[in-house]
Image (cartoon, rainbow, N blue to C red; front, side, top):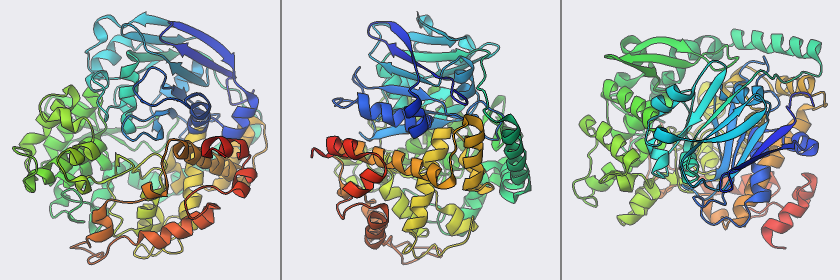
Length: 597
């Protein structure tokens, strides 16, 4: 096989057994890798799993056919499982070096079930695998674990104390500071007593058409270097540049989404971060963009924070102390936590306290509480034990579920959809819960990429949202960075895929693959009891108009967008894929099984 390594590693932690099986060629052609392959395995093998933290839950680490090649931004991988935060089928995505090193070890995917009797480390090196006792690493933080296991030609993915304590906001960290952050995937790894996975080796994916691939690689490289966002904006300021942009647009959620502008945004902006704390930049494997900021506070060095982290730990909590935000970001990486959900859950606690529903809770704008609350969340100490459950469970416990800014149980990120109407549609329909990475509408609504659309009127944009959702399913399965799409067209990805694998993928066929993956995820969630009623937003966004900024007086007009979305998807009014659509995608049998008909 070209592109794919042709092997999957099966791990049964309960029996302490590993075995290698050949990669199904039809599975690879139909679902590519990464997110698509992970969801296909989850759909087939995790039917009866009720509790995401039970040993029966499946945990899939998967690279894609482009991972580990010299194609730009090809250094990513995906983790798929049943989420303990949302109860949905879930995938999380990360960059760094771990994905290419998985393929260097000779595998396309690891499929892990069961739970070890004692904490273990999985070593996958040079085509073979073994389980070894974690020893004193259980209880260690991410830098300690990574430092103990990393070596030349090896990459480490691990959990910190948060994952060990089954915190529903726990991340899986790789290469020290990169994160499969969202959905509590780190808690699943912790429930299996799997402390870390070490991968490495000398294998490399082969390319079917080296000459054709080299031409497309050269062409895409030129496009990335010519685009102002990927050539200048992201390398210069990273994603943190969005703070001022979104604040000016009136789309920067503040104080648990009570406001859509932050008066002190300049203090936590990308410009402020660069002038005070940035020491350099870093890119993932094969990435010419290098959007990650190397930073230093006092004697402590680290990476980030990214835009989402600056927002979640800053504006959403009403905090403008940039040094404390940077330190909180470091602490989340050290303990293995999702910065978005942690910050948003703390913001929810702040509003509960503000309304007198959480006695002695934190208050907006108090930076002195941030670091202690992050640490308490990771170790489930005091109020941190409640924060560790996420905002939906926290708010419900205190009698105000409407104060959790979440969709399907996962905290929504840093784009107020009252000022970006179609972003509200993207949040509501996201299969994994509140997410901007399923379809980030900032490009067309704010930046004008690939073209500018009316951000205050989302009607007529369902087709655009669907196209972005389908393409992102492909990118997460190749696996490639979404930032590349700011400069590259769909045709570039189809030609990269074709020249690497030797299988002819037209642009339309590639996007149809993305639609198949999206629809399979929908079927999985329908099978688990999710319905169209879950395709919604927090009441605040539907009922409370924005108070300041360009969107003042507006709420999200979700209902007409959702009706249009279902129609364009070929789904019923109840959000169920039609028999005709399922037949088009080759999912008729899966539909009958999931829908019980």
